[in-house]
Image 1 (cartoon, helix red, strand yellow):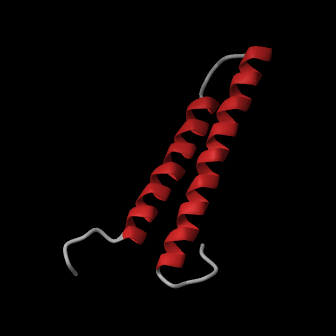
Image 2: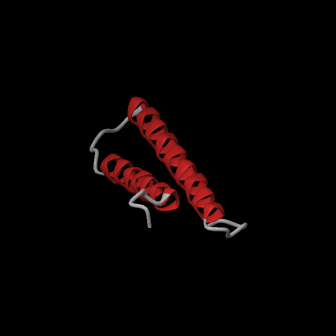
Image 3: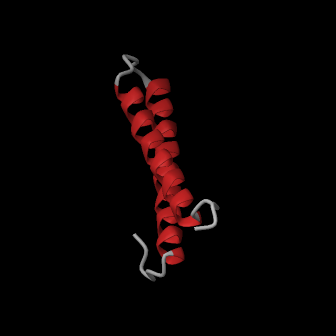
Length: 74
């Protein structure tokens, strides 16, 4: 190899970081001892953000697979 980073591996690294971030967001939110409508709204926003992280991670993983020549991604 020419010493250049593998683009597919870079995408996988970013995908893993996003998945980890989503997991950490959800975990931190579960540990909050906060009740009421504002707490519910906050949790919904955190869950939405975590879902966006998961969605982006899935897209990066698919792109990495395509770079590797695997059409379906995964």
